Image 1 (tube, chains in turn cyan, yellow):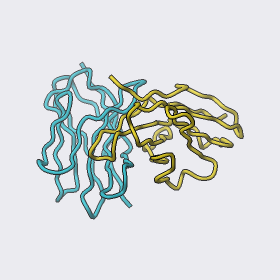
Image 2: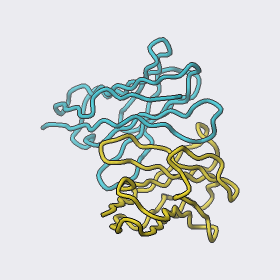
Image 3: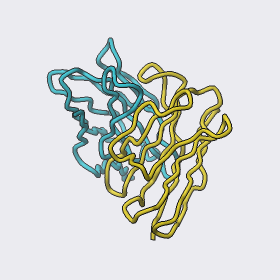
Image 4: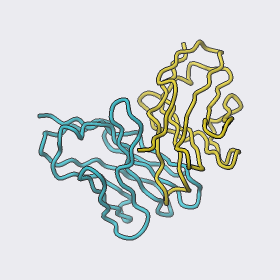
Length: 114
Length: 115
């Protein structure tokens, strides 16, 4: 069965520092990959997704992620953290040819210190 | 900007009672989903719904659960006889087509507390 692992349930960075949130998936066939963000009292919002083509994908708010098939990873990065980036981040996969459902990781809460 | 709306934002219910969680998906969307997140755990897929029927359901979605699109706008999740372990945040989502080609839009969630 497909699964998604996010390393670190809490990540804290200083404002201006690099943000790196890790995501690994288990799948014999590369799935479609997503990052979602959840701000307090709001729904999940799509940050970016990888389906096919270029393995480095850019999303909203300066985030990007790179699909590495050999490492079964889809880590999320942002060069310089902003206070407004503090939120919960979810990595998710859509298993190939299995309809529209998403399988989520457990989430990583990002804190940004001034 | 179109959004998925869920009501109520927080529901407290006694064990054994029935609850109905309501969602208004985006109006031109065709696929509807429920997910839940138990505190401290992963967001888990419950069920997907298309063309007025369930297209897929998870092991969690047992006979206690049902979904309905009663009036062409609302999409509801009913839990027939709640258990303590049903306490979770429940998210509704909708898409215009099948992922990954279209974005899934999520509601803000309903926090269900069973006491």
